[in-house]
Length: 388
Image 1 (cartoon, one colour):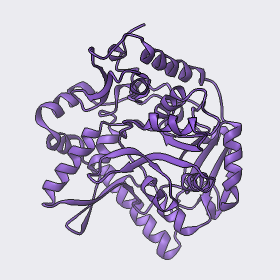
Image 2 (cartoon, helix red, strand yellow; image 1 turned 90 degrees about the horizontal axis):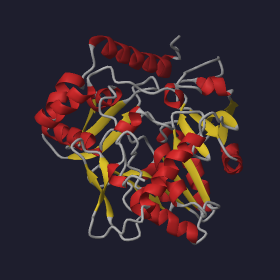
Image 3 (spheres, one colour; image 1 turned 60 degrees about the vertical axis):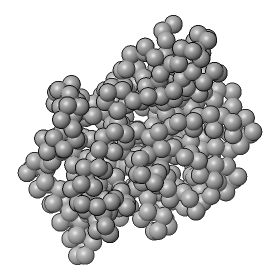
């Protein structure tokens, strides 16, 4: 069995399950030349038990076992509470699940901004802190010692909701095998993850561009159409919107190598419940489908069924057929139409500002389309005119 630090980069997701599995603390996660975290072994501490490799292999095998499966149920959902719906990225399902878990005496793990606007998984115990986990985070979060925390809580029979990408959820499931009775896994329909370094460099670039300290950052705000992927930062009290990071994200050139060959882009899901955006817009005259956010919800296990029933009365719900739910992030590999190797080399050699100028700006057609959507959103809001 191969050493964990020699695993092909196309297979390593950076989930940190191997680090948690190491009984001697010999494994740490270190950045490679592109800013992605990979396991590093301290030879002085390693006892060559290979338990880390076993955990990794179990994760890969578990991913393979998901192939061909389909969810038990699929729904489109939107929270009835306007404030919760407004502050949620889509339909507010994650917030409702997290709220229910905390009210049942549990805790919630999810991705949050830290003080420096880096992204890491944290544990939330109070409803008043759930806002930190709301909103999209288009970067790989730092898991650090999170799996160890989850495992310890599960051993104490504590109810735990863990939300993350499918590969992160797989790491948690494999590491916590035997203690899953009180674990609720919520995986996300994931597009892919760029390195934390890309987001950090974007923030530094923006701070220099706008001549001040960033006091707030948001990955995704509405452009008026309900589908906008526009980042917004606040500098010296003034808000600025940008599409630079989003354009780099959707180029697919900066994704982790394992994202290019993702095993989890399939109907079979690792989570008890899978959450994502309903991306197909209005499909009937039913006002439910208007441009305000709607969650796409896949219920994959009986445990997921039970938890969704707990929150269902708080939502407007529409049942979906599986064929209505398919989208690229659920079934197809993403391919970069650019020369990924060349772009990453330019990034390493010349820095973020160069790739931002070359690859981080919209062409005229995309910019025109985004402005047209924004106009449509304005007309819909103020004059009741809907785009067709």
